[in-house]
Length: 232
Image (tube, rainbow, N blue to C red; front, side, top):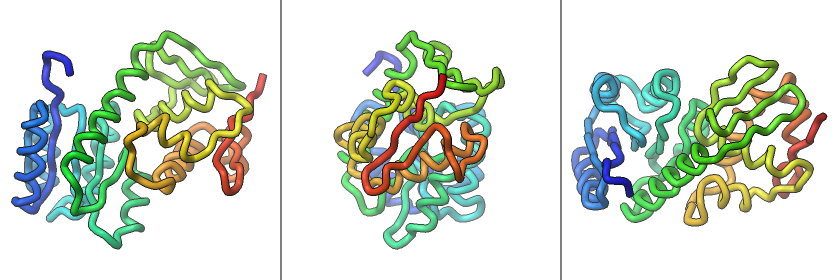
């Protein structure tokens, strides 16, 4: 880890869980700030800009979903790990649709949370140190600037979407299994399922495809994964 501590914001209304997470992240070397409400979280973002937000889905007042959406609109480079309870499958998917990078189901092992944060930060660093530009049809992915252009117009991507698109454009025409993509983008120590990947693929299609329901770039290989269709 760099000399400058990575900032993490924990937003969780259950005090015992919030303290548990905060203590473990602080012990792991992160600079942690915490709050119990979405309102306070959004206010804190003006002075405390975190690299990672650990965000509970069910919050009093402004919901975690609303907080996630506003984070994506104001500081899109920040990673969001959403916390959910068992049985909230619909809300998990909605959270991913709104821009969360990953989710964890409570209760969870704090070592797993730390592992996911480390993996997500490694991915962010890998994105930014490369010096490459990939072009395909009307798309241009500038790795150096961490930007995507479609018909010379910049398209806003989340860090996960950027990482996925990079994997696709580096492997044109190749069948990519879901598990392989999860390991590449989320890390070998990822404990989640393929549902997370599929939701992010759907979001990415909505941003780069002219007709997301009939994609020309990201093709589905049923029962297996996806393939990037290269265009000249």
